[in-house]
Length: 331
Image 1: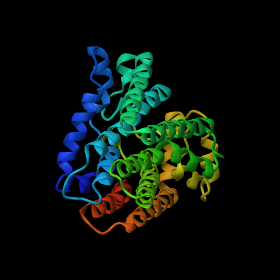
Image 2: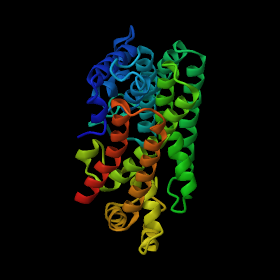
Image 3: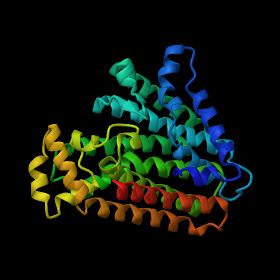
Image 4: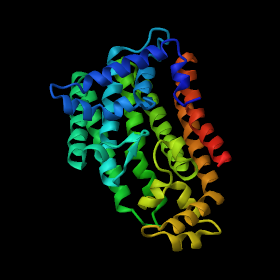
C-alpha cells in the first residue's frame, strides 16, 4: 500500500487523480516540442501526487461525495509544478543521475536545460496561481521563497557534523512542509472554507510535511535503491546530515561517526558510517519525531466532522510513518 492509497480509495479519488494528471500534462504543453518533452519528463515518470491530492481533499472536505472543485485541482497542480521544478534544480546542484527511477533531466539533457526547464515549471505554477486570485498568487510566491530559504540553510550546513537540530528543522520546514501546507491551504481557500478551517487544513499540511521529510531522511538511510527509485545514502554522501544522523552523532558511537564525517566519503568510510547510523538509536528517534508530527496533523483536522475525507487524511498521516517503520525493521 502506498501512502496516497487512502486518498485514492475515496469515491472520487481515482477520478480526481486522473483530473490532476491531465491538468499537469496540459499545463506544460508548449509550441516547442523539445521544451514540452523536457518540462514533462518527471511528470510523465510518475510520483505519488500527494500535494495535489491534498489540495483536492481540502477542497472537498465539506462535501466528500462530490469530488474536488476544479480550482482545488488547479491549485494542487500549481504546487506540484513548484515541487517538480525544484527537483530539476536540486538534481543540478547534487549532480544526480536518477530521479523517480528514470534519468534526471540534467543527466539526459545537461545542466543548462535542466535549470531553464525548472524555471519554466515555476513560471507555469505562478501563472496558474494568478488565475486563482491574489491571495493564492501571493501564497505561492511566498512558498517558493520559503523553499529557497530552506535549501540555502541546508547548503550552509553541508559537511557540518555540528549541524544544529534547529537548523535542520528550519530547512525541512521550508523545503518540504511549506509545500504541503500551501497545497492544503489553497484547497481550503478556493472552496470558501472559513478562516479557522483554512488554518486547520494548513496546520495539517505543515505537520504532515514535516513527518514526510523526516521519514524520507530515514528511508535514505535504511532503504534500498529499488525502494527509493534513486541511490540510497545520497544525503550522507552529499554531506547533508539529517535527523537520524544527527541523533546518531549524539549516541555511544557518535565520536567514531564524527571522525568519518565532515568531508567526502570513500566507499569503505561510507559503509562504516551508514552502518553506525543504522545500528544506533538515531533511526528510532527520528521515526518517533515523525510520529509526533503525524499525530499533530491528525489532531489539526479534528475541527471537521468525521467523514470519508477526514478519515482518508488521518490514514494517510498514519501510513507515512508506518511504512517507514516496516522498511526500517526489515533493513
